[in-house]
Image (cartoon, rainbow, N blue to C red; front, side):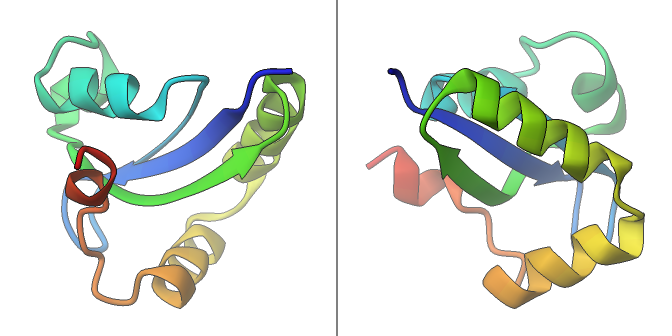
Length: 96
């Protein structure tokens, strides 16, 4: 089984949020940051990785992603602030 990730990106603190899923977190976030992923994140300037969680398989990650997308914005913000209260961009830590 290959690990997979659910991630939340933001345009800024309390800004526009995007929930996604991937098996290669570093590569996927780099693509978002460089504007290589057309659509929502490029249109709204969503470039900060503010939350991610690891799953044992892509199936598990997709189920979790769907749950995240169903949650209200306030719940997403509470979870981000519990794990990352400063809304720090987590990508530089991953890319080391």
